[in-house]
Length: 45
Image 1 (cartoon, rainbow, N blue to C red):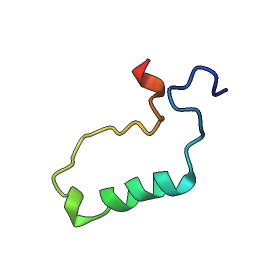
Image 2: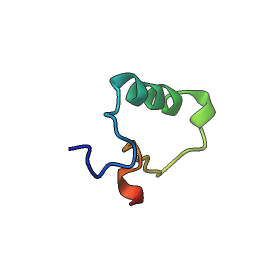
Image 3: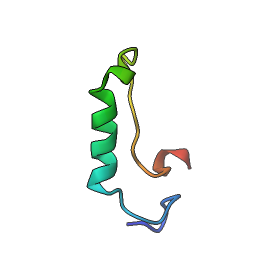
Image 4: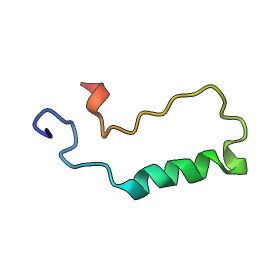
């Protein structure tokens, strides 16, 4: 599964949680209608 991945590891649940915490914070108040790929570079190739 990781053979063609840019970064050869799986995403950790805490990495996803960190993005969720940011998006739920006041710091992300201006972030609207955006999409965030958490894929360790999979879509970059």
